[in-house]
Length: 162
Image 1: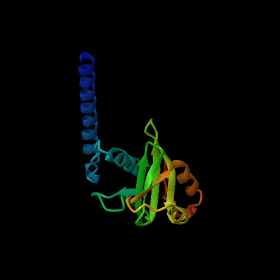
Image 2: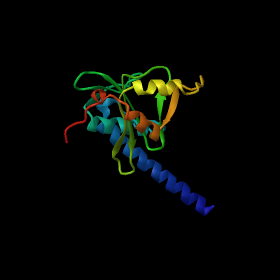
Image 3: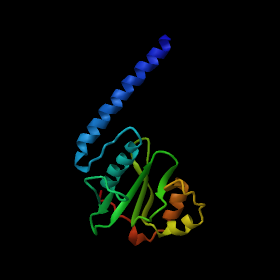
C-alpha cells in the first residue's frame, strides 16, 4: 500500500508539472487560441506552433474547421498534422489545399513528413478501403514520406530563412 501511495503522489506531482507547462504555453501563444490540453490536442498545438516557426505560415487566431493556418506569401489555407508516433490522420471528406505533416522528435525538433498540395493523396485514397465509421484515414510516416516525393515542388510551403 505504501508503494501505491508513492506512485500516486508521483503521478499527482507530474500532472501538476504538466499543467504548469500547459499554462505557460497557453500564455505564450494565447493570441492563436492554442489550448495545449493534455487530452490529445497537445501534440497538435505544439506541431502547429513549430510549423509556424519553421514555415512561412500564419496560424489562425481561433480554431477553424479544416484549416489551421494560411501561407504568408499568397494566403493559401493549410492543414497541419503532427505526430510523435508512427502516423497522422488525413481527412476522408475533403482534400485540403495544402497539407503539412510533421513529426516532433523527442528533442522537440520538427521533421517534415509531407509538405504541399494534396493531389498525391488522391490515387492513394482511392485505393484504400473506406470505412464510413471514421472521418480520417490513418497514414504512416513512411507513406507520407513516399507521397511527399510526388509533390510538385512549386506547391511546397516555403520555409523561413534561418
